Amino acid sequence: MAFYTVEKRIKSDGTLRYRCTVGVKKAGKYIYRENRTFGKLSLAKAWGISRVSHIENNGIPSDDQSPKVTLGELIQKYTSHPNIKYGRSKADVLKLISRSPVASVAVSDLSSGTLIEHCEQRRACGAGAATVAQDLAYIGSVLKAAKPIFNIDADLQAYSLARQNLTQMKVIGPTQKRSRRPTREESEQIIAGLRNKEMTSYKKVPFSDIFLFSILTCMRIGEVCRIQWEDVDMQQKAVLVRDRKDPRKKAGNHMLVPLLGESWDILQRQPKISERVFPFHSRSVTQTYRQVRDKLGIEDLRYHDLRREGASRLFESGFTIEEVAQVTGHKSLNILWQVYTELFPKSLHVRLEQLKKERLG
Image (cartoon, rainbow, N blue to C red; front, side, top):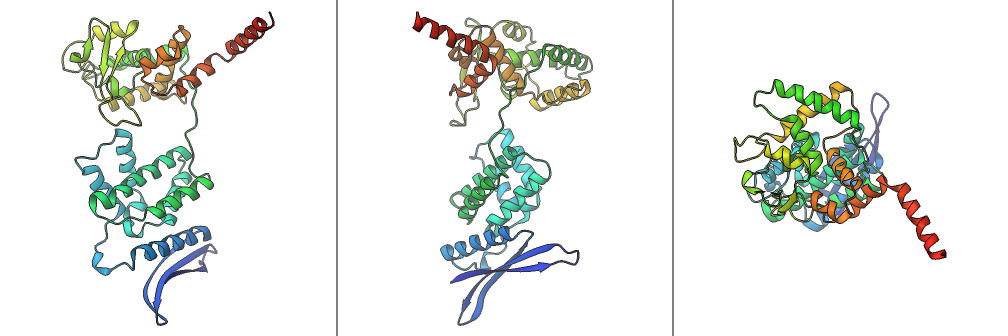
């Protein structure tokens, strides 16, 4: 029967370390033993519990399983698989994890303590609770694919235990709601700065047009740069946005989006030099935007905030939540409802008073 022990050690500089030993004995002698050292007693115990559980469920690790596949190697297999689909955000995060210390740990040795230590290090480096939660979620998706797709054993119980403890420790948490919108002055300054960039752009990228188009259509920058001329509906003044982001549907989520007001004019004045309306790399567009923003000293304004700005403008123009959803592509109206109530809290109070008067009258 597997067991674990924790030994407290004091380093030469006075700091405490905790060495956890996991072992299996037969007739009073060790037939298997492994150990790891941690900076916290809770991490040492968590790792010990996880490894004991793994050995009880899967048996004593065998030497013939060497060489062991590391997490970094598993991520490489995952990202290289032709039938595993994922977005740019997940690809970037997995690339970052591949360069972190946890990537060198063998998948068979990946304990809850190791995952907790990785997440605590990320927080210590300045990452927010939601960012670290995303890290852990993407690691989880890789580990869940290990056995069925690559025939590599992974301790999913250790992952679940780490997630549970990290949530309780508040190391990971939900995304904080944002309400940031560019002011009129900020928008004008950014557009002027982007027009200056256009003058020196080798590929003649219409940065200012793309900026305004992003606001008016509420599209993500990746969606804007994927629009094809063949998907433009001239009669309805609309465009088919392919593979629009949806947490419940990874591909094939095509939507016909109306191009209202000036957004139609912006599209029409683009030169037809490619099958795409805006044949430019989305990262180059956002990088240029950030350069202009930072030079102007505008703080905490992300390109994705333009999507909220566009939805807010539609609400302020009098469109209903359902009508705005046809532009933004939201399947759930909860997020749009939050935007609406942020914009019009005073008007809601006025409406409530009117209803009260009508009932009394």
